[in-house]
View 1 (cartoon, rainbow, N blue to C red):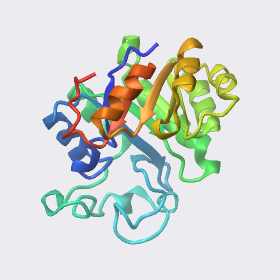
View 2 (cartoon, rainbow, N blue to C red):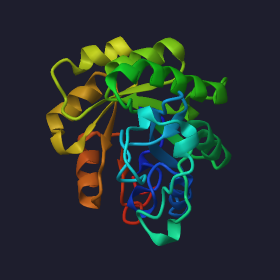
View 3 (cartoon, rainbow, N blue to C red):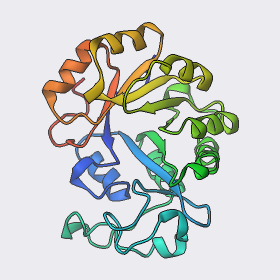
View 4 (cartoon, one colour):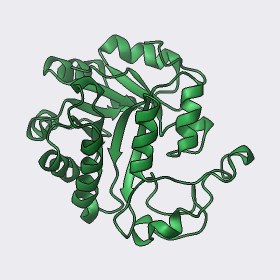
Length: 247
């Protein structure tokens, strides 16, 4: 039900590196992580980039929406100094660049499709799925990246464009219709916030035959607890605290 790595570096390198950057992936590698979760959204000119926030101001300087800014402008912005001076000069990267880096270094991926606005969900999913599918044509099933999203529409679009890629439905709280949604998406897993998970919900998901993935677990004791419930995998910010192979 979950043939993929068990512990993923959240947004590339957890809290130790600028999120959703190549520096993040490098930091994850330095801590033994060969599996990462990262976010994808579109620029105004339809370039899929690694980015979490829909607006500048936290990880990128200035103001304005990512979906209303061209890649040519975004790629020139400082993306590392906000975290630490040692990362000064780091830039954000395209999905293509992120995929190439991870493939070159043997990093398994959970690609979260994160539309900057609901109306962009389908386009974001289509372009992201196409980019991933091009690089994994004919690859073994266990090596395929999982596409995840809080947007049901985005995952339906990904299913239409690249049905061979596995999908995980993201939900903060597990609602009563979770199984019907997974069936409609032909998803392989349910991804959920560990803070709202219960042993009974975990057991129900596993009994239905799905993988169960949690975000974002930063304490070893909590990781052990949800593992005892049947959780298959999780992502973490604390790649310095939780060993990549300690599951």
